[in-house]
Image (cartoon, rainbow, N blue to C red; front, side, top):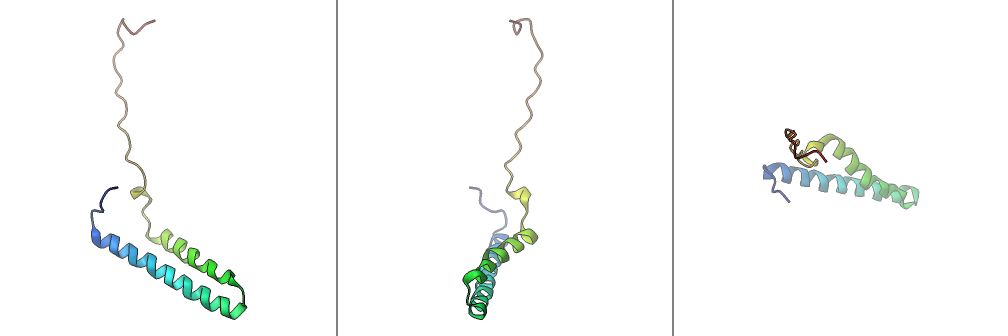
Length: 80
């Protein structure tokens, strides 16, 4: 696994993740007590998913592109 080029960005994203988890847990707790149902805790992954849409950089998750294969000239030895 590669180390991040900017440790501040990693710390910032980690704090956002924890903050979204905490905000979702608070909404889930309040919703659970107001409605009597535990369905309010669905807010935890929803908060994280919404934050991911605004913060994520999908290009950081993609594997590096492989170099294209060079075209080699055909020779008389390649024929069957």
